[in-house]
Image (cartoon, rainbow, N blue to C red; front, side):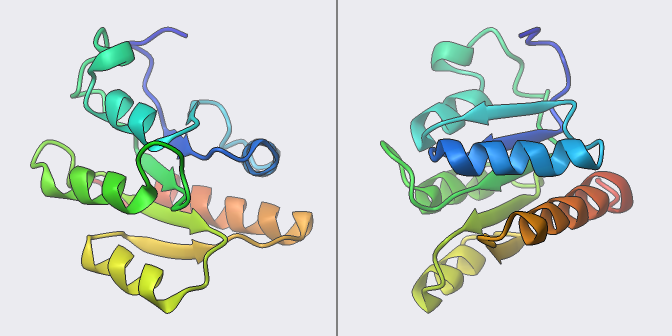
Length: 146
């Protein structure tokens, strides 16, 4: 991958089926061009902060949107969210929690840490693609970034 290329969406997801559904959903509505997939929280933080295996990136090349699962290996989603939203260089990046967790404690913790939205993943493909369409349309086309 060309590391200078702008990433529209950083998808932080360890489940291959959910990755495929998300990519298919975004691609169906032409939001799938510049998606970077990382499989755990540690890799997500390295990508976002341009260190470790992504040290050749520039931290200024921020994704337009981070889609973040909560249940991740190595570093969980809440910790990724905490780090991203507590750093002045990255706190303005919109982060949408996209998870299977319906636990009230996860929702409260996510909003307390600064998530921009909390969405429970639909199991049905048709519903999932509609969620992808709405996410892409709102966060990539309608939302005005600072």
